[in-house]
Image (spheres, rainbow, N blue to C red):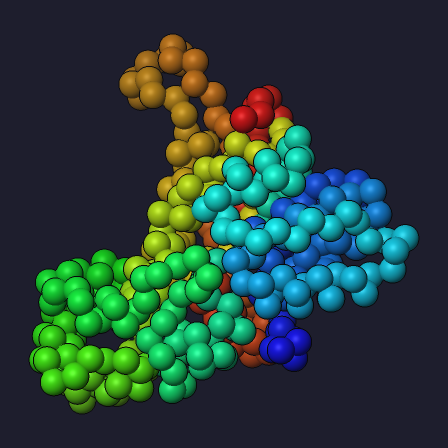
Length: 324
């Protein structure tokens, strides 16, 4: 499956610029994938550095290990490729036995490999089981279980909350009627139900009609939003003073959580706005380096259409901030 990891990392140049990696630093790629970003980061921190890559996909870890192993010995940092989820960042980094981290990268969402592997069930364009688990070895809840057991009100809530689906209630109702005849078990079956639920006039614009529903199911299956919050908070704790946290998100819910988390750590003062001098003593923990998210250039989107919705936000830990 090595060929599946020949993909172009999103916003690579922009990430490397903001990360500003130096020799002998410790860098954590919290979403390692095929090591597209980490391969370049590894060469910057060099043989005296430490690169910790985290992924909950064993195939990704194996592919990343092969790619990073091609870096010459005299330029390759110490590699710690860890099986896990960034929601468990504290545990993973304790196991890695590092005192602190100089830079983090989170590249969120589902990987190209997962989308392009029909058996994973992430794609609405391919025939496959309704699975969508990012870590099948540990997770039990699947998209099929959600589709066939959640009541229609809960389905509509998920589609609306996690994907801003305009036709959420109608799609949920059509699913409810379809599953009375037989359980929905494949992506193709679900796509047909969604197409039937959305009026033809609405299907002619806005991309594939199943895109939002599949996004919502993936988020529910993997608890992505809760995991993101806990992972970002842990990353801020582990950052060394002056360290950098880069996060690439791909939909508005993720971006909003990143933005709000950065704001919560950068605006700590709780004094009334009319108080001339801070009395609470709460100091900012991070400085937000990107007033607006950085987005791909038109040239990058042309080369890699999956980069189209990417947004990069960056925060740096204040030099005066202590550790965890």
